Image (tube, rainbow, N blue to C red):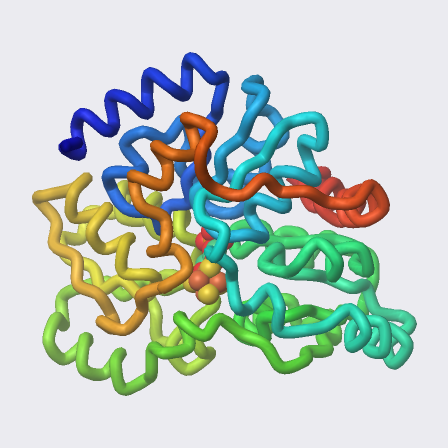
Length: 305
Ligand code: 13P
Ligand code: SF4
């Protein structure tokens, strides 16, 4: 029988032997982060996927992240750690609906949160992540923006770019939108001294009350650099555990106990083991047409830095 440690040792040996780079989103569990070559948010993972020297990339996260890696590294074998790990938000809009919306807003730049399918990305001008959205929206030459699919991230950006007109369509993260203004009131009352840090996928009435709004790694960087002793964390609850593990002298509270992404939780250390030994995960396959069309919008994002 394996222990966590012996399994991790085997994974480290096999990933070297089989030339596999393990990329892990920060929402993965601690045992997986410990065997990863790179840990980050969606933006960091995209950059890393493009530059990893190994011939195989294993994405421990959700499907759109693995598809982004394949788009950027078509010559590599890209594996998704668990075939059922998707992001529900990525599929909230169909290609047909987006094509129709583009007709209704012909002067708009079509900006897609990276949490979208590759097929949707083929119709977009530029992708953004929560870490890069504000910078890219400010820099885009167009004054009108059709922003898909996350209305909450979109509204958070729009409130800081008042010179542009934004069009939204229904959409949002079903996990982050579980957090309510009532959760903020309860957490603030219980921990009045704590800083409130939230992800921009949260509802506007939640983000409006935060001391800091930012991507997963933005939140982690904020805590590392800030000298407050306690923090209420408004994003996937794995981040609360990672921060508590890394910074034991500080105290971290989840803003809501229901902010748990079931898709991100699907991957286990055993899945990672099976993937590095060539017996698990799902190889991502995209048609050349979809890949090259979708690449334009990801390249445009990376070009903005
Ligand atoms: P980040 O851009 O912070 O990695 O967020 C991705 C995501 O899926 C958050 O729910
Ligand atoms: Fe998608 Fe939300 Fe899960 Fe992130 S937390 S992967 S946006 S469902």
